[in-house]
Image (cartoon, rainbow, N blue to C red; front, side, top):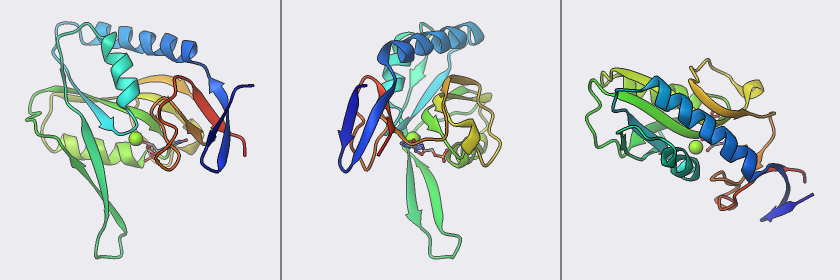
Length: 178
Ligand code: IMP
Ligand code: MG
């Protein structure tokens, strides 16, 4: 079994590159079919989605725009704790068909917040395309329009996903073993 050491943790390969690419191609074809005749705006979420977005969008043959966004987390002064802000959306999305491209949906809180923020700007539609989803970890309901793979509620790295900033630069996906 192929293993990967990231800092103090050991991971074992769980989704090989070929499986990922097969699913990426399937999802890209679904998007091309669903948005035929449209010019969607893809919003990949940094940092995690960079690799998935690069692979997905190479398979999308629609005329489209691509603009990366990022979520900034900061501590508010009030006791509500962490507030997140979408940064880098330097585009007018009014009347646009927006497709958010994410690496993984875990609790769903990030995505719920993102959708809410984007909806305020009157897009024609907002869809979610996530490489991975952990269905057992979802805490809020989020519409997931496109998903490459559902995975168990385990911690993973690779293919853009990190452990403490490291482990993003692999072709395969690895699951924490120890
Ligand atoms: P959510 O708000 O709980 O859905 O969290 C989503 C974000 O948490 C993702 O965009 C990832 O950056 C991060 N994340 C969730 N699960 C994992 C994991 O297994 N490995 C690495 N990052 C993860
Ligand atoms: Mg992310």
